[in-house]
Length: 212
Image (cartoon, rainbow, N blue to C red; front, side, top):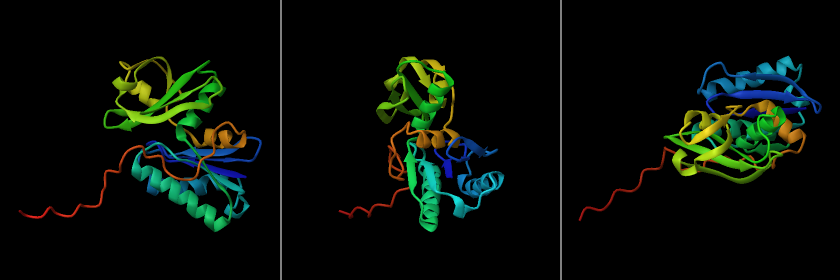
């Protein structure tokens, strides 16, 4: 039994996969507030699947790219649960989950890209082949710098139509597709470490310059 969750976007999402299919899934009703919403959503999803934490055999977690605070909540939770339960933790690039979903849904055919909102008027972007396997990225950049006329999946494309004229769904990564990607071996398994791609906003203050 695999517990999967993602906190790389404004929406917190959790799912349980039994090896054959997703048997329970929930997402936050509010955006942001990842720290307050993840644990209750995990508890609710496990209850719907009639599972105790001790019955889990693995954890899958979105590694981003995404904002520092949101990713930290998901990754710390995954590592803590994995350590306490003594089960493996599989990291998945959150953009990869969107790519797998888009291919499975028939949203795309052939090569395409995935772009999510990186805030600061930037996007996180990666390129994929027709099977949804990542072939480039992820990177973070201004939309104009990575503009494309080809199909681009994700919220980043929808937010910047001038740069991405062929925007397609789905918009945000979901735990269901992180679980599917892991169970079906359709994405690269990564260490449970965050893909920030940029420095966190909060930095240790530098020592004051000496007065000359």
